[in-house]
Amino acid sequence: MKIFTTPIPGVLLIAPRVLHDARGAFHESFHLERYRDAGIIGPFVQDNLSTSHKGVVRGLHFQKPDPQGKLVTVAFGVLFDVVADVRLGSPTFGTWFGCELSHDSAEQIYVPPGCAHGFQALSDVVVLSYKCDAYYSPATEHAIRWDDPDLGIAWPAAQPSLSERDRAAESLSALRDRGELPEFRP
Image (cartoon, rainbow, N blue to C red; front, side):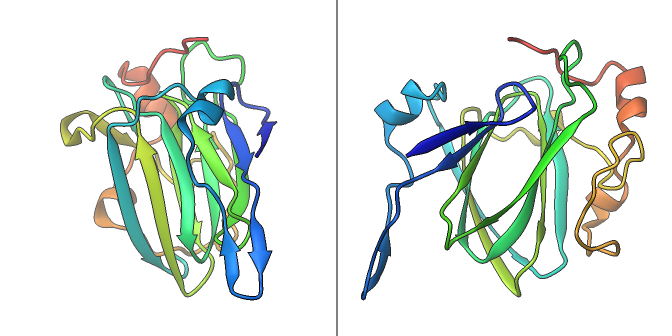
């Protein structure tokens, strides 16, 4: 397993060792001690699985209070994954990191608590699996507009399919003005 840091503090790109042979491939998608050694402390308390069709954007989501750290894995397909630093006081507040993830590469993204997460499905079908270190709380979940000009995310497709909730999401500045953004905890 190789761990790569990103420009955003706490956001990690993880490349598990994948063993290929004539039958297919195998890799460990989680190993408590190795992930703890990499700084992914957990404990993880909830696993989620979502299925999306090509062009769908989900996010950008975060919780305050009760922020969730997420270990994101693509079980099937290809997507463009985005982490936005919306933690007040962070040296990279208002920036984002994005990369393509696929089941072939087996790469994962660790999203630290307080960052917003979203993705766009690039293949016909995407199955996304993610481990969370806090329980989902609909009452404390917030959404930032996928096309917020303050973030300026370079999504692969300009006209995504969105849920009603994501279509009605607010700007980063509106959430900041109302005090609804999490604090950076180094």
